[in-house]
Image 1 (tube, one colour):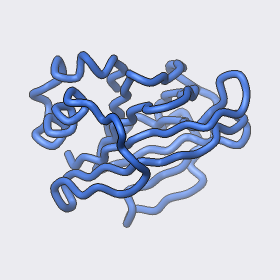
Image 2 (cartoon, rainbow, N blue to C red):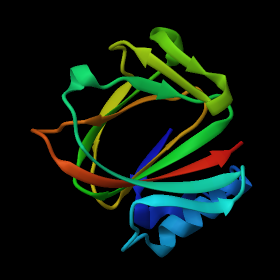
Image 3 (cartoon, helix red, strand yellow):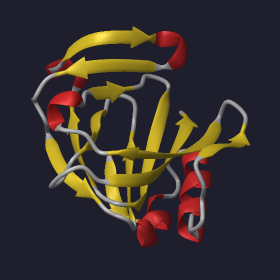
Image 4 (cartoon, rainbow, N blue to C red):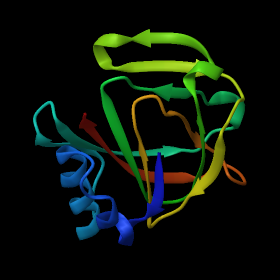
Length: 149
């Protein structure tokens, strides 16, 4: 997992070619990005932009992936995020064809607040619980890169 400021994105180059492409795009800025799907390199790298309202913790769950990493970039609003080891959680949904695994549990290794100007990189094996309210319901806009490892 990497949690950092957008301005520091280029410090993390060199781990993976697809990740590098996404980090360079973050460093250029994502101002004005509208909700939707943006193809960047077929099945290797793409970007989705979402708008949603944050939820109470008890309505959220952890997710993890086996083949892909995610980069979450907060564009507007704030949300709380927790990171955990999937082995410490209980899997309740598995969609291998979509590289999606969902978990319940409360064994967070770390919890923090994402704000505009920050990004989070989660690798396979990093279960992440997202969309959680900080102080109350809040409308957020977030971009998420999916990159193949």
